[in-house]
Length: 206
Length: 359
Image (cartoon, rainbow over all chains, first blue to last red; front, side, top):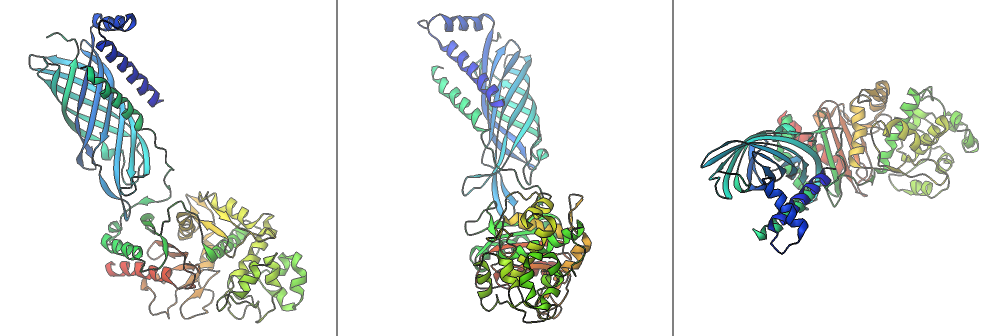
């Protein structure tokens, strides 16, 4: 169900992108939709960066990609994150496994302040995904568990007048429903911070 | 900006990757822990693991250690994996002992002093050729003192002959007595076939069916295989195939005095009686009801294993239950030339040495 939902969401964004890229020779429907988005003041924003996410009493780097539709102060989109490098530890002694995690979900945001150089946002993401212990030698997954998480965060973008901006976020993630040996939801819950680049074609007026 | 489309296609692909893995659920019996959580040293166990990998303990397939209700060691060797079913050889006998205890608990059997002739009317002819045969009791079968002529230690002729016959129980009961029942000890793993047939007659279901209903289902043992003799009697001599973890569960039930997840599966009276020494046929071991124990006289036995009972399957499937240490050591191996006391036996000693050093 989650997969379908995210797939549909992404297809919709695909369509938005195509609509925005359409040139003057493209026929009516796409153009109409593009005009519709412009008329309604709907734009889009994308974020690519790294989260430093809580992992077993330390921070682990994970790649993060967000894409959202924006309308005035609001944004709604999807987010995807994947743990990089992978934590290695004894799971079933004496075997060592590597932890992999991937999550995806929806993200809702609101701009709370706007200035010449800095914009501030509050976002909340709800994510579904899977965490696995992987055998480093065979690359096979040994144990896997579905997990869910909620991530409220505060975001600041610097130099908001350009479409490419520096973005930094601080937030808290609460993971739940994780059932893996040697780890639990609390091991991945806590404060996180992230840094990345944001593409903002939001039709916002400065 | 026109080149941005592939980026989003990549994102679409990525979003679908993360939910496509469906693995078997993990075992739910024990939590995982490391040896160092029990005043043991991880490196010692890593060294032991290395020694097994280097085949210093020959042909070990699996080693599982449960300490204080936690799984502190589980590893598989020689291309074996957790889900593999393996024949536990004559460690199968122990299920016949457990089944007798359950039959008493369930009211099918009054006493192990009951002569087997009363429970096996279909073998009247075989039991009639010697009046003493009719006096053989279940207790004597459980303690390898039936008196039936049998040799599977020096040669395997009798075992082979039984397994080549159409009715293994009949083959066994046809054997002459070479001692008075209850007198001389003579290891006879074939005698468990008689126990299997007795359970079948008492419960109107085969031993495998009875054990499945009463034991395996409670212990959540789902993947198992149990062969029969040509007449359909469950092969309690050497016919059971289990995964190593499921084999370990049987030991864990006994360590917990027959209680599994707050449910009494086997009475603690039976466990106490069947796992304690009934007689000592050798300086190196005593025997309960098919369970072995270390003896006081055995100088090299682990000092912290006085109350340990174990089943030493001849090919190396050994299960050690050590109440003093709240410990189970479950070994899987395929060693056809060592009999009881081969590499699996010495592996248990090595593990107890690791306890000895840091107590």
